[in-house]
Image 1 (cartoon, rainbow, N blue to C red):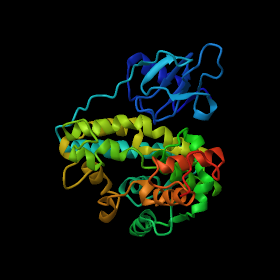
Image 2 (cartoon, helix red, strand yellow):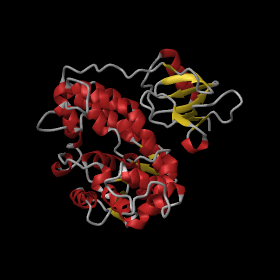
Image 3 (tube, rainbow, N blue to C red):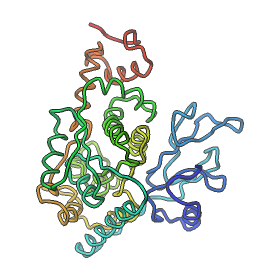
Image 4 (cartoon, rainbow, N blue to C red):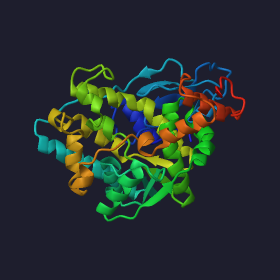
Length: 377
C-alpha cells in the first residue's frame, strides 16, 4: 500500500485547496509520485536521509526498512525520494467560539462522529484503558473491551479497576513481570527506531498490552492519544515554566499540539509492532478543529486542566472518572521504574550518563554481558 489513512482523491483535493483538516484520522504515503504526510503527522512516514536516485527504497512506513531513517515532515509534500519537502498544510490558527456552550456542543458532535466512524468499520477493536478520562471516554463511546497493562502494584492497574467498576464494565488486566520488559525492549526499540530511555519506556506499555489484545483475536487497539495536547492536559501549559516557550495558556497548548508529529510515530509503531492497527478517535480532523475553537476558559487553569473536554466527558462518564487525573503511562504502569531497576541489576548504574538508554542499547545489540560502557561496580 502506497498511501495510508485516506483515499488518493481526498489527499489530492487537500493539496489543491490547502485544507489541513480534510476529514481524516491522518494520512501519509505516496500520491501521484509525491510523498505526503498530514498536518499532525498522525501516520508515520520515514525517508532515508542519505538517499539518492540510485537508492531503493527511499521512503517507508517503518524506520527499520531504511538505512538512515528520518521523519518526513508533517504537513508536507515532496517528490517521492523525499527531497525538498514543502509544507503545504500548516496547523490552522485557533478561532475560539464566542459561545462556550456552542463550542462544547461542536466538540461533543465531533467526538461522537469519530467514534461512530470507527464503530462502523469492520474491525474488532479493544481499548487500552488506564482509568483516566481520555481512555474512559473512548471506551464508553466505542463500547469495546477494556485492557490495562502494568505491574501488579501499579497506579494504572488500580485506577483502571476502580474506573471500570464505576462504569460497570469488565476489565482484563495484563500483569507484567521484569522478564516481559527484557524480552520486549529490543522489539520495541527496533519498531520505533529509537533507543532513548523515555521513548522506549512510553512505547513498551503500548506494545505489551497490544500483544495480549492481538493474541485475543482483535484487529485494532483504540487509545486516548491527543487529548492532553489538544485540550490543555499538561501542568506546564498552566505553569508556563521553562518547558514551554509560550506566554499564554493557548500558546502553550498550541506548542503541545505541534509536538504530536514527533510523539505519535513512536506510539503508532509500538502498536503496529504488536500486530494491531492503532485507532485514535480523539485525533480525527473534526475533533482537532473543534479543539481549536474552544474558548480560553475551556482549556486549563490552576484548578482544572482539559476543562472543556471533561465537561463533554461528564455527559457519558461517572463524575469520579470524568474528573480524574492520570499519570504518564511509563510511570503509571511502573514500566519506567522496573526498566531502571533492570538496568541497575545489569550493572548500568545511575551515576552513569543516561544509564537506562545504555542498557536498552545493550539489549538491542544482544551483548548484555559485555556491553560497551558497562559499569559493573
